[in-house]
Length: 337
Length: 283
Image (tube, rainbow over all chains, first blue to last red; front, side, top):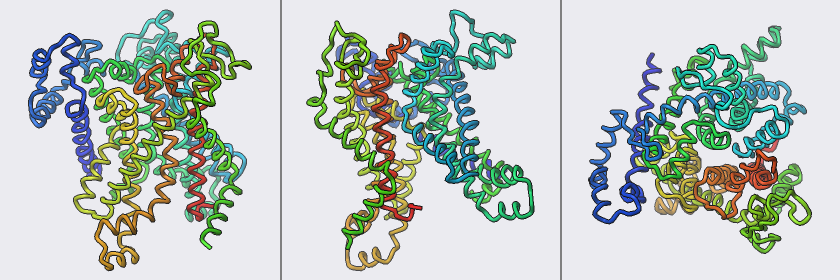
């Protein structure tokens, strides 16, 4: 339990840093929110009035204290574009983004790990070269470009994919009653198979385009880690003892290769959460990324800062989960930390 | 002697790896477009033509035209300067900043190291593209701020790398000797340590360029920084995206392909440069 506690404490400095940065982004940089809120017809007096109302005339430390108190109450301010509290908006849209990210991650892991393992069992073979070449080509493609190409091929040319109109074609289907906010789960809860199939079909292309970018680091690290553990003494011993090939590969080599794979997941999450914004834009996905983009374009400060803060907290939590998983995979991590 | 080793190394890097040669050719093409794009482009990239909207690729318009009748080839060629300019300036800035901060952290250690390390950790605590969006939103929506945002999110990589490299050299004999010879800390750093860590840093920079291009193009894809009608690859892909439903693929494929080509070129160059500077990696 000592390790878990220590790791939990370790997130506190990151959280403090993240809160300070989001505060600085919204309060200490050029660009005058007061002038913006006061509107184009404002004069100096009304801007000053708005500034006092928003608390922007006080010193930075005082403003920071107000910011902390607001955060503690879950108050991220009101969004100009929707007129709702930012937190409500974000929580409303978060499940859509999480659902997409989750499916992208499943795709990347389900394809990347077997690819890496396969390449590692036959180093320098044709399979290995194809694997490495495709991975480095995939890394050069911008996520949004991949998304558009997939839409063109699978929707326009082949007609296999549904129209990229977001999470569900609302003309043909009705959204399931909200329980978790993820359409695939909610439609299953409601027992509505048609909607489930429709929402899953909408997910396929965005999840693949998002996942392709995460594929490269996962496959590369898996290959490197597998090459190393397949060449190690314990694998040789297992082979000499006459253990079946499958057992050597999975129980001996793969289990030991998992740790570096888990460690690269942190970087993968950074990619996924960032590229999420681009993919939501391409597919009309109603997640927090699309919300943030329209907020940025409308100079909706509170909404953007809320989004940045929420993504950072999410990222810190995901890294925490990965680190805890790593101790399950390899108990030695506990002692090294 | 030194010169011949270098030529042999270059010969080796190109000979062994033809892809590096391809990358150099692509780089020259891109730089040519960036330098003389407005002269090379067959049409004015901003000129609209109501009679030639969404023309498919043909002899007159090899890449077709967009929804306003502008020649896509001309726009793609002219955009090279802006796209490469944004990425290169961001990488140069983060290279310089990361080198300075990282060297200071690695050489002086103690509080300097702790404060700089903490700041870099905080940057890394964000999903980087999201932080870039936040920075552009806070600083204002302009090309310069895209460069600044890209520079900030790349800073930790250079800083950590420089710190590590300086740290291992700090106690080496030749540095001790330089210190004994009466050089001040800053002199030791700039004259004796930094020249030695520049080559591996250059490899990092080259590998990082592709990512900087993707990042800047991603920001303009979502509508930040570059304003229409300025030709830029990211915004052109985003403008072309609305034509997908009706099947005008050329509107987004060519600017997107230009992006892919540029990123691919810098990734290959980075690999080639690494082979050149670190012969041990050649197996």
